[in-house]
Amino acid sequence: MQKTKPTISFVSPVYKAEKMLHKLVAEIQTVMVGINATYEIILVDDRSPDNSWEIMQNISQQFPEVKSIRLSRNFGQHPAIMAGLSQAKGEWVVVMDCDLQDQPKEVLKLYNKALEGYDVVFANRVDRKDRFLKRLSSKLFGILYRFLTETKFDNSIANFGIYNRKVVSEVLEMNDYIKSFPLFVNWVGFKNTSVNVEHAERESGKSSYTISKLVSLAFNTIISFSNKPLKLCIKFGLIISIATVIIGLVTIVQYFRGEIEVLGYSSLILSIWFLSGTIITTIGLLGVYIGKIFDQTKNRKPFIIDKILN
Image (cartoon, rainbow, N blue to C red):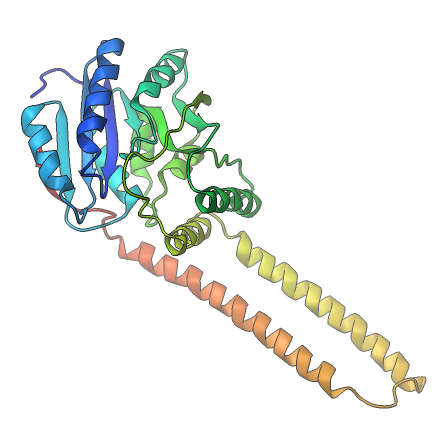
């Protein structure tokens, strides 16, 4: 067990990564030999259904600088990251995925840039190796998120980066029920920059994020960070009301001028259906926000740690 406080803590959430863990740890160790600083590696098992935990146990027994954490159940990637951050002791914290698409060798770039006086250095994936649908969904989410939250967001940046201790402390203080680590970092501010890094193909297996999970994550994140959808509903309702008044006045004028001979049944039905759909959608959206408020007021833990090794 290390007696000195580590300079760098590595935090990586683990899910279906049994074939990649040994290589991940080995590559981090190789990088840290070059950096020549004390370090710790924190692997967080998000109750992976494969043998990841057994492998993590073996690695922790072999290397005292590797801390293995197991959550009580599957909480999701971002709560798992928060669990790892809560146990990190380093002056700097590197967050990276376990699938080796975030390459440990790029940490040297991030660390050297941070030493220039930055609190946050994001890894900018200039040439993403993800599948087309994942890249497309990420781009669409970025456009929608920027529009609805009116904040800057770069979809080429994800979890991978190096973060100063004070940034991590502020992120951990955020009590939002819905967790999104990169958006939390973006919100807390501090002096930040980004460096271009090489993004690799996934080492083994495939991503656990399905399209439905990605859509759900995007929807929950936007609802958590913005109330603009409600404001848009108000604006839309006002536009419909104003348009209805104008059309009503025009119809009255046409009626007294004798230009309306047969009153339209279809237009009446379509108007009713259209307005009913709008009202139901608005009420549903409002219900989602109320539901999120309900979840937040429960004040439940975003994660529960079952076991910690080292």
